[in-house]
Length: 163
Ligand SMILES: [Fe+2]
Ligand SMILES: [Fe+2]
Image 1 (cartoon, rainbow, N blue to C red):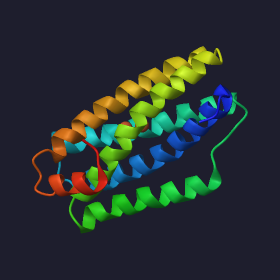
Image 2 (image 1 turned 45 degrees about the vertical axis):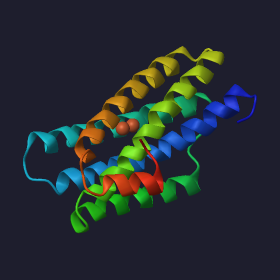
Image 3 (image 1 turned 60 degrees about the horizontal axis):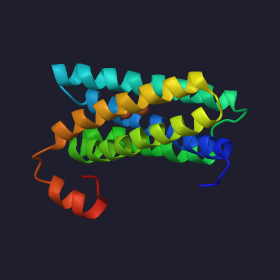
Image 4 (image 1 turned 90 degrees about the vertical axis):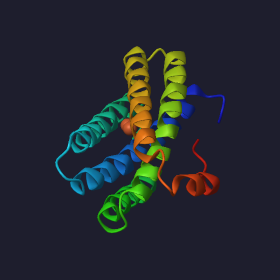
């Protein structure tokens, strides 16, 4: 991280912007693989929230005179599509585990981003970013509940982290 709040903020927002597309596609694959249920409706709602985040992050980037990084976009688009597809093939645990991991990073990133945006007097972005940090935490808690107790969770945690 540099000492330039603008550069830091752009870097975090570029990460988040691409992270959101991966999460959104993973959730889309997940709810599409489920039968009608309250859980399915909730994950559909979460997908919509991720697209909304992406839009708001894009707006902050624009205000900074910046935009997404094309290579990162391609990589995360592919990750999201792959996670979304694996929901139909390998069952839901793996994609949801990785989506949960993406989420846990997101909420911290949005809080950091809000601090930098404050330094830059970008008050609209600060409010958006804090709101998104709060929503990401809700998502993380929701997915924690979903994967909790799954037989693969202890080993995945050992390999990939996320407590
Ligand atoms: Fe999000
Ligand atoms: Fe999220």
